[in-house]
Image (tube, rainbow, N blue to C red; front, side, top):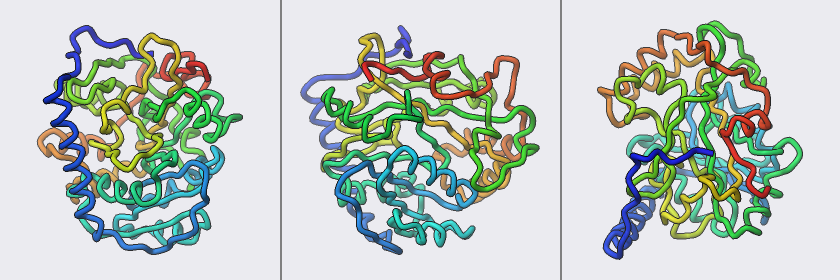
Length: 345
C-alpha cells in the first residue's frame, strides 16, 4: 500500500524506552481524568450492549450532521457519543433529539484538552472498554472495501478473527473543481457529490521514530500550502477504529495511539491487512467562514506562525484542482489506486 521511505528512522526500542512510553500513556490518561469535570451531560440514552460506537467532538457542524449521521448509520453504527464544544448553530439541539445519540457539552478550551482527545478519552474509558470504538471528526466519512454491502460489524468480526485490535485509514482530502466557495451544497446532501476530486498520487510514508506507526503525508494541502516545509504538512494516517482497552490513549488526534502495538495497522508488504479511507470533507463552501472562526479562536493549531498563512489562504477560497486531480467514483477506485487495502477481507 504505502512503501516505507528508505530515509525513515527505525522506531526506537529497548526496555528504557518502553518504560518511558508506559509513563507517557499514564500521564495522558491522568490529564484526561483531570478534565472529566469539563463536560456535562445533555442527553444520555441507553447504549446498546453490542455494535460499533462512534465518539466525536465537534463545534458548529450543523451543515454536515444529517449526512454524517446517515452515513454511519448505514455502516451499522449502534450509538453516537458526542461532545459539543459550545456550538451556536443549532447543532447541539439537533443532536440532543436523535434517539441514537448521547450528548455532552463543554465551553472549555478545545486546544487545552488536546483538541478534544482528553474529553473523549474519559467517555471511551466509561463506555467503550471491550467495544469497537470509531473516533472520527464531523468532516470525516469512513469507507473501506465493500462498505456498501458489508457492515462495520462484519469488518470488526474479521478483525477479531485475525487477532487485530485496530483499523488504519488514510485521511483523503476531497475538493471541488474550481473555487471552493463557488460550489453549492445543501444540508443533508452527500458532500462527495460536491467535493468530488482528490489527489491520487504524491503521498510519502515513513516509520514514526517514536510511535512506530506509518507516518503518511502528502495530498492537496501538502501540494499547495506546505511545499516549502513538507515535514510540517498535515499528518494523514489515522487509526480511527479500535477495540478499546482501559489503558489505551490517543496521543495526537487519532494519528497515534498508545500502546504502540496498536499502531501497526497499514499494509507494508505482508498482504494481510485491511485498511480504509477517511473522506475528508473540510472544503465545503463554508470553508472561508470556518477558517475565519478557527483563526480568531486559535483553538485548532499549535504553531500559529505556520498555520496562520494557511487559514488566510483558505479564506481566499482557492481553487485546489490541478491537472493531476482524479474524480471520485467509489471505494473500489480507492482500493485500485492503492489508497486502501483489502488484505484477506
